[in-house]
Length: 102
Image 1 (cartoon, one colour):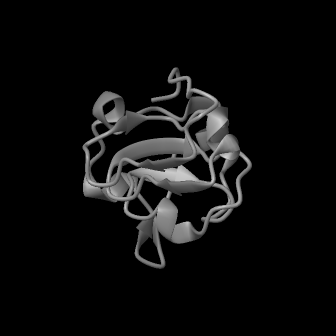
Image 2: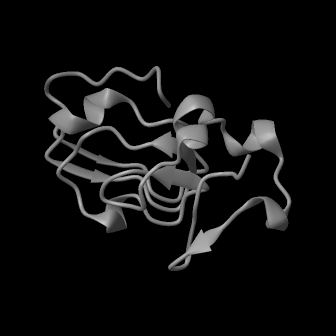
Image 3: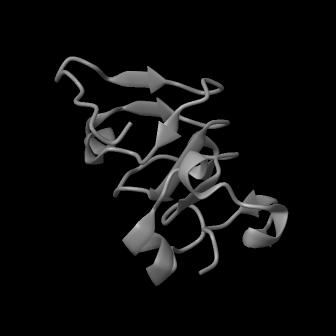
């Protein structure tokens, strides 16, 4: 999803529950409404004004409004299908899976 470009006229985007993989593009900051919950997104969340619920239940998103990113996650931010983690590879905080541990 990180290479997606949004048209200037796009204001609301709901991709929840769509099996979307990848990182979030910086272009999300130009949207008025966003919901990418319940997907397979991973990596740092670009600066935004959306609530945590807009990003909930993804594989390893981090950064505001979710848990802070670890340096490892900022550098790698690999999609889940590339890292194939086992349940021990993730640290859970508040019901949200955090970034893969290195």
